[in-house]
Length: 80
Figure (cartoon, rainbow, N blue to C red):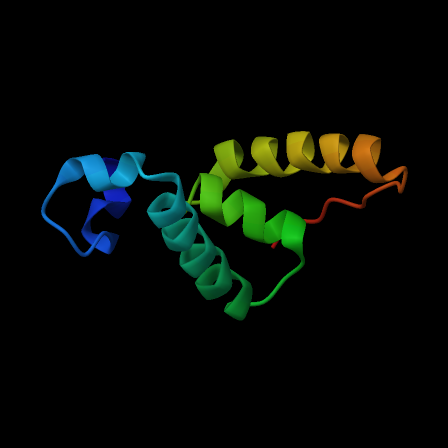
């Protein structure tokens, strides 16, 4: 279950496989990370790698590239 297993209210690890519960936990986490400030690209980096550093920066770049491809809008990646 990784580092966010405590976010599931049940002690049953299979709850993480329930797509509705999993999406609810992910939405809560994204809302908390968004409250820290920054754009959604920064939030995606924090979600993927809370410790930050190079792995988060690499994820932000990849995320921005895919987001640009989907939206057709060039995204600017900054360091938080």
